[in-house]
Image (tube, rainbow, N blue to C red; front, top):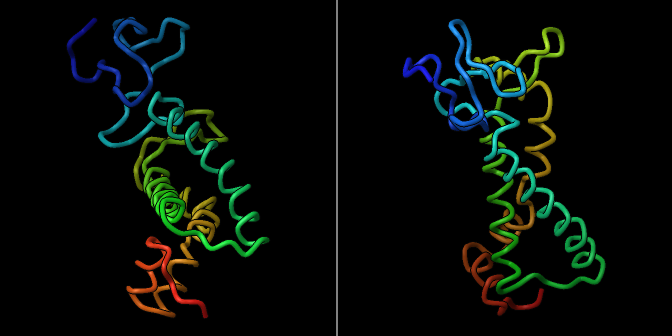
Length: 164
């Protein structure tokens, strides 16, 4: 394999050195498909990191799909460790928004990966960003901060919030 920086596949692309061969004009995977050389800090949607992230996200969404209706329907306050899990899930979704601003996508016209950062950002802003932003907004935490200040936010974790 060539040591030329242009022919080294990105570790974020999901390929390892054993999965590739280098020709005189392109880096090609063993299955014959070309490897996209990604700019720094741009993720491939087919890369290992993104696949693991999306798999974990499916589990998180499964938890949210059952816990939220259960807690709201039965009016069960979320406190203690469960509250901390909810805060971490909110953080997970905010990190996901950041990652989506840095993940390539396939252009529908050319069937090629778009790797230009600003094109990726604009595409995300025009497609899923608003939905992701609204669904990730931690309304319950903002409400508790507005009603009782930082004490109300902390008492949710401790489980000793006064009724009312």
